[in-house]
Length: 119
Image (cartoon, rainbow, N blue to C red; front, side, top):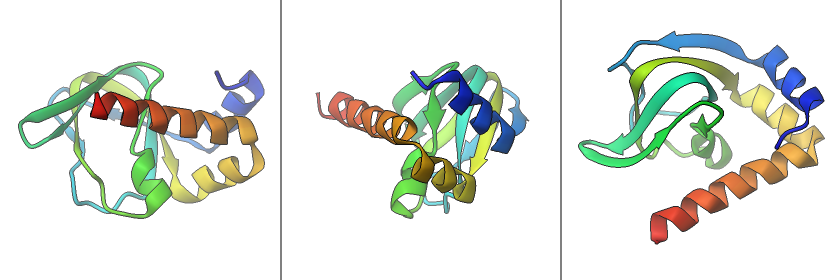
């Protein structure tokens, strides 16, 4: 739901990264200095052996650690080869501060995930 001009701006500040199936993107407890948007493939979010969610193309991960400055709350492991856009903390805050649509989108995403977790 992000307008195309904002997506273009995000793409300019993001770094494309690739992970193979089975690779860890991050682990619970690590410091989170970036978030990711899935361009292709899928990622499993879990705590040890307990699955939390599977994320696919267009979804993001790692945003919570950027917002609250706390360590990562879960592990992220690649289920099938993945291409991600990695957005650093500084770039994330720059985009958020100048764009209400993106800020509202992040709040909606987090609210939706919280509602799913408590149901």
